[in-house]
Image (cartoon, rainbow, N blue to C red):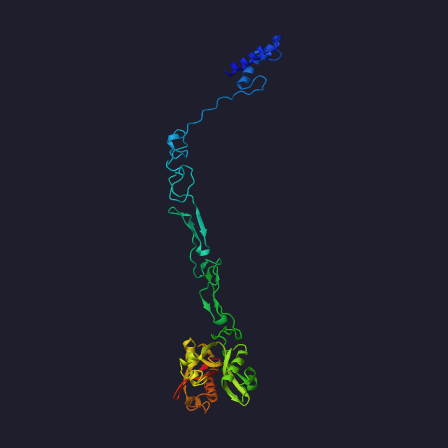
Length: 416
């Protein structure tokens, strides 16, 4: 058909040629060779050119050859329009033609469905790893059709087993089960490659006032818990001017002066006394490990009515009230007042590690200092008697009486 059209156009071109054109021109118009030979080879060549869709002068393109027919659409065999179904043009069968998101090759989501029609549900969603050491967990990202989080395991105490039990990134650190030595000498058996070695205690050092058992004898700050210091009223007066050894040798002013003196000694923080005195000389006992408490007289009067700040501010009933108050706070005993105000006092409570309450008699105390007896049961003489009694019992010193009744005297002794 295209050859006939081309030949028609050539004839039309010849008919329109100028009059007088010779035969050679006509042959050229008919697609022959320009030399007028009109050979069969030239005609065949022209036929091929025309089949390719071009005129002889290659200036006008003709319609391309007819394309192959398009395949029929998936059509009525694909209700959800995803290209998969039962029609002849479908890419393949569909396992669910009511859901366009479900077909072979579809993306598999964590929802309990088989989107890619391979017979498996939620496959290929991988796993997540979290935690370190024994806490490391590998968990699926999808469980029962729902996204799942990865939760590390719980850490445990580190054991000597080559495993990071406490999940801190280190293995067998401080993991020896056997300990030896006390205080700063305590050591744990070394753990090497998951196996426990021998336990060797550390070397003791000289005891210092630092809250540590430096000499490894099982006692903290021994030698510093209670220390008897020799001083003078001249020195004490610099801490509180009423404690001058003349107008006052024992009393509220000297209590404050001794407390301040002890607090300036470094290791100790408070104290009482004088436990011995003669002329300008005064010995006082300083203690470490105590806790100062400010207590209203109203609170002390609730324990011992006479210790109300009016009837008594310092004396046997106040000694008892302070002792009982400190025991109520969880301490072994207490002394004071170390500072006095109009409506409240400050007292020092001492723990059991520093002090011990001891029951004795005035008969026993008088054996250490005669003037301390049932008729003279509190004051400088009994301070000396109690100090000597406690020292003879292996303590550094003591204070009291914190309770008394008849010949019975309860005192508090403090440890060195």
